[in-house]
Image: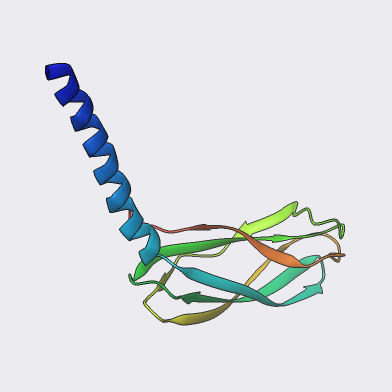
Amino acid sequence: MRKNLFKLSIVFLALLAAVTGCELYTAVNVAWSIDSMTYSGGFTTVTYTVQNLGKVDLTGVNLQIGVDMSGNLTYPSRAWTTDFSLNQNQTIHGSLGFYTGSNPLGWATVLSIDMDNPKG
């Protein structure tokens, strides 16, 4: 009987953790787009738009932007934006300039997103 109660408790805790995580997962919804890309003197500047469509304010948000240097959908040149906050329904326009050496043959994309808040 104790073994079954212990197993049932483990299953219940796992289910509770999954349900709690789902609420946070559906509350975070960030959309982004690359608006333009320019090259000058070894540096590429990428302008972007990012929008918080979710239900929570976000802090310490960073986008990792990569540039396709060869036109083959690989992104060897990449950099992170500085931290910014993104409140509910807020849209931010920004730019990121970084050294790529040569003129990219492809486009830029957001490779990753990181944020301090919410934790979960």
